[in-house]
Length: 231
Image (cartoon, rainbow, N blue to C red; front, side, top):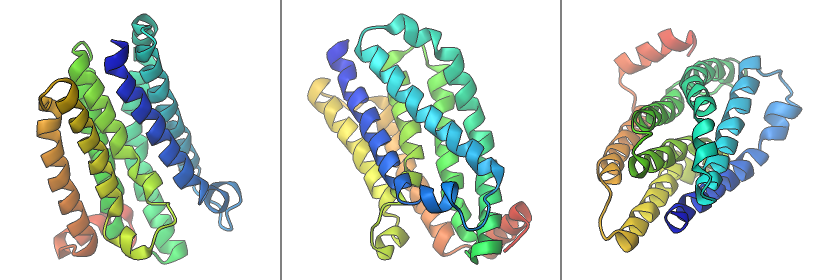
């Protein structure tokens, strides 16, 4: 049990480090000392986001330590937090896109990126909740759900703008999934069905999201304008 679950604890710590570093580049200007006051919902979203990462690391650590009993006791908190993430995530994405358009003269189509992230998280989390009594499925789905969230941190890395525009954060996320697949091939000599199904769907979704970001059709833009009320 301990050797099997060590990988996911290491990956949980890596994801926490990625998000911490990414947001450390912008938290001062955007949250702590903003020139223009940010909507209060952004602070709620930040708190939930931090809570999710903290709980994910804690839960991975508990499994690594063999304390499955406490891991399961924290299940209700995990379910409540996970259920709140999509609601607050979508609301924050819409509110902040309106804020960025009005105050920072940003563009509307980028909204598809956080919407895709939230959608990916929601599907993976929902399936992880359904299959919580199937550990091999559950841990992989929780890993994928958390991978879907780290794009926000990666997007704040100090990299060339061309990298960001090319969606480099998706390459990093997919690489992390490929590492997990490689681990399965080494340890179990097969690709787990969760990864076999999820990775192709993730890549297709990422391509669609990137395309709608840079080449949005008129009906999609119209939908976004109605959703955001700006742009």
